[in-house]
Amino acid sequence: MGLVPTMGALHDGHLSLVQRGLNENDALVVSIFVNPTQFNNPDDLVKYPRTLEKDVDLLKSVSEHILVYAPSVADVYGEDVVSVNFDFDGLEDKMEGAFRPGHFDGVGTIVKRLFEIVTPNRAYFGEKDFQQLAIIKNMVKKCNMPLTIVPCEILREPNGLAMSSRNVRLTSEYAAAAPFIYQTLKTAKVKFGTERANEVTEWVEDQFKNHPLLELEYFVIADVETLETVKHKVENKLYRAFIAVYAGEIRLIDNLALN
Ligand code: PAF
Image 1 (cartoon, rainbow, N blue to C red):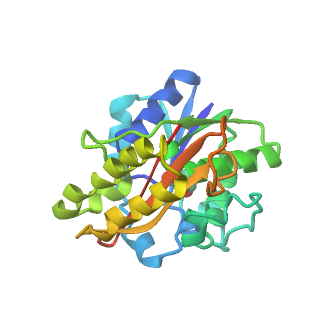
Image 2 (image 1 turned 60 degrees about the vertical axis):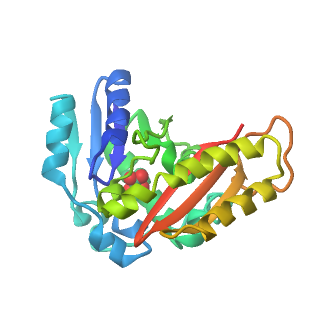
Image 3 (image 1 turned 120 degrees about the horizontal axis):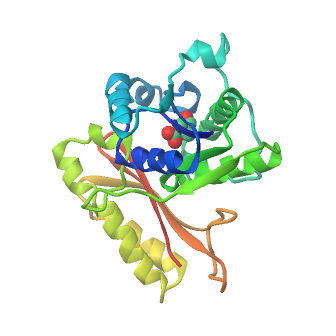
């Protein structure tokens, strides 16, 4: 059995995970649950798109044989809507963890709960949330959970914007500006071939200082294993660029393999 955990507002990025899950398993569960404990910003939780009927129709259009698990908050948490405190060996402290306190404890709590309820053999996660993927792999290994985590590549709009449930909340002005994020990542990758990591980081920060609409929260070049910020490039290590940007009140994240 495969599991694709989602918070709904499904888009083609989710559907690519669903298609892979259908191909690789006898049965596929898609969970749809807006998990309250992973939202550090209460306003973001309230405004998170909830489109269950549309999501179910979309899944039906892919296959009639998908099992949808859409629990209530009480089903999952009972009376205590709180997170477990996890130790993800420091993977949780940086980037998303630094800017969204408690976020990864919330993610760990719900994902562990879903694994216990659904008992999948494989679970599918998108690389757009690369840090989330790293902490889930860490949790599965440490807790000896009997399943395989399957990473899935980021799906992008034709203009390069990483697909996200939050994109539907972008006004047309911000939607037109947002592809700048991926364009900047792609140029950063080219620069990383010949320049030092801190020079590339400064260059990216400058691009956003001059941008009329998009506000950079962080840009980090990190080791893909430890997620530590790279100080000096080392041969045979893999690096990735991570970015978080505000487009008005919508927070967008993206990342790109650099080598
Ligand atoms: O990536 C998401 O959509 C969520 O963080 C997840 C994994 C479904 C947990 O709520």
